[in-house]
Length: 421
Image (cartoon, rainbow, N blue to C red; front, side):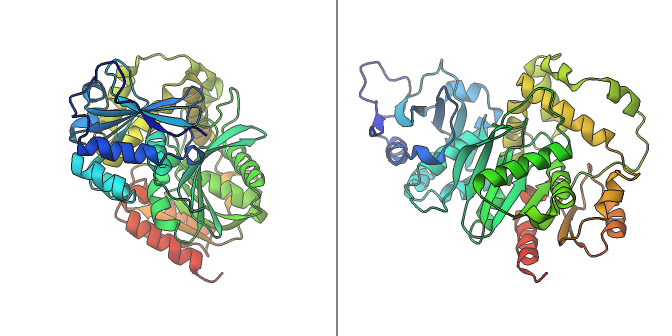
């Protein structure tokens, strides 16, 4: 394998104001010198990841900051990383921004990167999975439990995964419009005791996006089973947030032999109130999402206005992840199809959700956000009626407990998983 190289001595003039041997540049050189292609998933065309020197808060516009950045570009092609001067005319696939002391600390100990991100000293924009993948690929660690990204081939196509740790397996399932990256805090908290696998469900993130797929809970559950088969995992704990929680419940109903314990983080549940739009949605085809009615700036502006704190930290990165999938025609069609299935799911009857929910036999933990505006905590009463043995935790957070209240959420998960059946 060719050795990773640095091309700062190239004949073309430097396109940045960073001194050639600055401390930040030496930190970037250290990182790229440790590059391990086996733990990062990059697009087939390769990737350009910008390591910018500056104020992370100022980089959170995700736009002009990438063009005006000072620092280095990591160009990845054919499993080979090349550190180059920034080319302002080239748009990066991912943008990482930190000040010089932070870059130095990250180069000395990559574990400082997660702390820096949580504290707002490191910004990761545009493609969170790719940006974090680069950090994972430059740790220099050979520990088999280190953080790693992969494309897993299954009968329905490639599924993108993020994995860390060793021990009993836990599968993590994201919500509607989310990606596996929403479980980065879970990797940090759970991988010391478990083999933790977060997956981009079909239609989302970097996984396959088949046109015409049902994108309902059963389809997603079958996809997870195919992933477990490919990974040689007979059964696993399953943790799901929002739509991923609904998929986890489907696994518990449809394939209980593949599930150990279930953890439901603000799970999506079938509506109990009237659904006045149901007749119209049944006629509307989600494949219309292949057409983009509104230009990107309009869509991006709407999303950033809706999501609180959309220019900061996890919220900003989450918005980027949503837009990355939504602005792809296939991803947009999948989003509409999944949202449509959530709204149209029948609550009652022999095959209704609330009727089938009573069939779950395994242990389950429900984590509710007291400030959740999408899945009101009033649903807890109905869950208690259907699953009287289920456990419940209420947290002072919104719809994404693993991000908004990571310490409390993961302490509850660990306690539940370690408890006797």
